[in-house]
Length: 270
Image 1 (cartoon, rainbow, N blue to C red):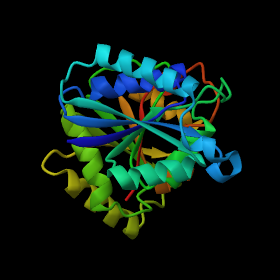
Image 2: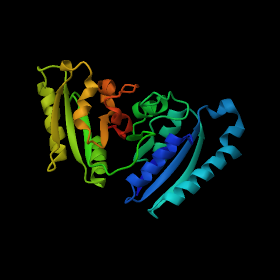
Image 3: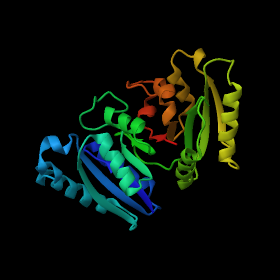
């Protein structure tokens, strides 16, 4: 039984992420914890803030009714959670309390810039909560994940917990993993990078991932590397490598590679 946290602000993007979760995990028994956070500490709002308002309860009832109508696995169970607190604190607390295996949320909520690829709240959860996060675009429609793209510069060591999450999720649809090696110059990889590369490849054995090497110094627009990866179904990043990959996931639109904005993004911690 997997424990999945679904933060929601009841926006269209959050609803789409919840529907995506049910399809992605259609063959897996799951507890889905629907979490709505009023982003202020309760002590500043007064005692009444500890309980849901009739308006929020109504939104939860509507969401639950819709989720029950579209679920296909009888072993999918939904639980309502409400918290008046700062978002990160509320998510951290729920992850610890419910032993959450995966946070699945929209890439942006109702209040975020419409041109942004990753909203501020989602970005904060990705960076600050030590739990795997799968972010789903408002434009994403579910399809089986057959090829997963994993950009890395090998400058960090990948722990077993981090890779176990990736391997488990890839196994749900028997997906292949393509490692996109990102080097700053032809002097790389260094001995340390080679050591981390060998460990990463060994972790996937016997199903060895495809390697694609890319030198960022040769390309003024590094996001063009994705043009040759149009068939990927998911992008995976290590949380410690988010700065490295920021140039690939900048908050802007790109007419040449719009499919980036529609791909699920998995961020791993470990």
